[in-house]
Length: 452
Image 1 (cartoon, rainbow, N blue to C red):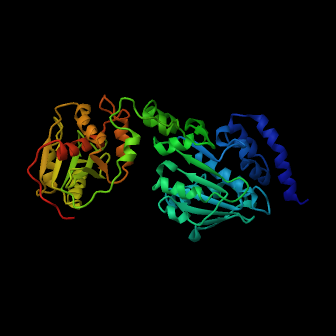
Image 2: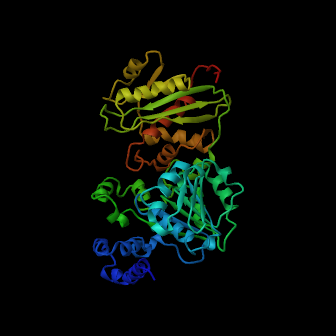
Image 3: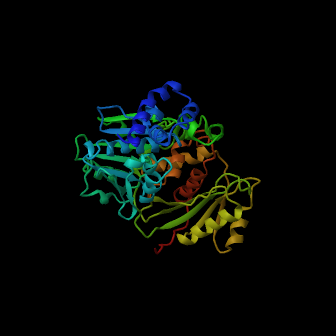
């Protein structure tokens, strides 16, 4: 046995001593490790069972899909990378029970590369030097010394999974995926090699019918990890700052506590409805408007400026075409955004809410472009009251979304009778209400037929 093997064996015997020092104080554990020989420290620092929390490990058996719901910075990526490392290196000189084939799937190819592979907690950071996989970026492939292969895929290209087969899969940030259902369906046909094909989903939860159904499927197990639990690995003061800002809100419960927030019982819109209203418009549009809900002040730290593009077709169906909302913008910045949208979509009209005592919105827009028609509108009723007839049109399926608008739809489903969404001003919802009101709930002269 050479010196290297002796040191590795010595490091293994130190695990019990290290665990006995402190089960909860990582600072004491780190101080102990830094006194060791570099080989011993290498082994201990990368010995995941010492450092990982119980909710970062799957149960031993009885599952096909492990769903790890975690807050921002809760250690989801590290848990995913460590599970893949275990699967890939399970058997030295062989390919383990995954059949040597592993899929790594993210919202985009760059997400897989930047987070799952090259990220601070990604696969290249968790392996010991003697088991480190080689990353072939041009082939989008990881290759382990024992022959196991990890292939990269993107939810933007679900058909890229056709013909592939795997024994283990890591799906990161599932709730962000484009073409979610199609990608997931293609993936299930690929889980067909190895002794026990399984898949891990690591994601910050967002209310969606798909995720809720996945959690309830036979063979799914769920663990949750909160942001606070990973406090020792985050920047000093981060937890206090983020909790002071978002604690108690629906957004905080979702992004920090990893709660799957159900629909509001008192809401005007719900998630199931959002997933049913997707429909591509048939061009040309009969009418197109740009609706603007400007912030009440000109400060760059003020609320976002809601900018929604909507139109209706020859049959009178309304379509939300684009969400151009701009956050924390000066009057010049949001006016430029509105004018650009007006010309991009060859709109007929800009509908702009005038806040009492606020900026001269019409003047600001005409200073940017004197040619655009602007119709100022005044809010004489509460936000909730104005939104109710628009929500009724959604319920009657007279309004569709040309594509998913996650931020707008999140705000719609969080919008409550107090006129707020997660305690914040519903800038996108306000603009949406003005757009649909202009198109469907007011009488206008016969509009012209537009060219595309």
